Amino acid sequence: MHSPEYYEAMARSRYIVGNTHFPRWLERREGQQIVQTWHGTPLKRIGFDFDNDHFASTQYLLDLDRERHQWTMLLSPNRFSTPIMRSAFRFGGDVDGELLEAGYPRNDVLLAPDRAERAARVRRALGLPDGKKVILYAPTWREDKQRHRGGFLLDLRVDLEKARHELGDDHVLLVRPHAHIVEPVPGAGDGFVWDVASYPDIMDLLLVADVLVTDYSSVMFDFAVTGRPMLFFTYDLEHYRDRLRGFYFDFEKRAPGPLVTTSDELIAALRDVDAVSEPYGQAYEEFRAAFCDLDDGQAARRVVDRMLAHRGTTTA
Image: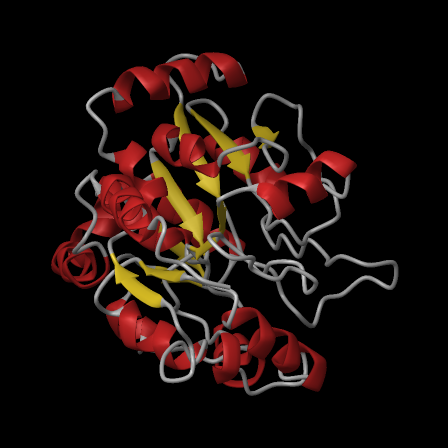
């Protein structure tokens, strides 16, 4: 980023695809397409729907108001998200762009015919030991846990020593902090805890994970495509939901797995994940029906087809 080649590519490319905010200086030129895929089905409030001091600043909203006019296409990952995307980004009316309901192209790999072979390659590349189950812990960030030098704190809350003692014989724990986190994972490199913050593609990590532990991260919607068990470490649910971010639906009622609030509960659940997940079978199926309804392995094809159909019709 920010190399001469980067600026040239942004200026000259016919297609620009991104999954988060674009630079505020970016202005779409004639014939260019800017495709905003965003980066997750929204449980947490986004865009103009924010109602807290961390995001609802004048500058943030001004930047978003300008940016939305640069997009030729905004992607919706499922039917649930479509009205939220339209409202949260005010994408309609005065915006000359298409809101495409197509599913997430990134999730195609989770349904690809060669997904087992790819997962085996990822395990080898990471050096994961054979025969051990993979726990992927992928929490979101906390906007009120900012460091004074930039970035955000890793508020792990997991007793890693106890987890190692209870689970280390037949499990490994991959920790994937949010991109905004600037601290290293403590204890990584001991054979049980693996810091995979810098691994380039989280979809590979979802492929190899036997169980996902998260909190309020949108990674839950992606992982649901696999049908594998999920646990939710929600030690600050009331604060996060009611004061920090706000939710678009009743997460406690619709969660596709158990919500645990302490490290001890989490470790105990991981020791017998099938048993603790069994009561959530129906909730999981309803979750997939609501949020994975367009995930069929062909989302990338649908999005590219629409991009090509727009070729020659876009204007500045």
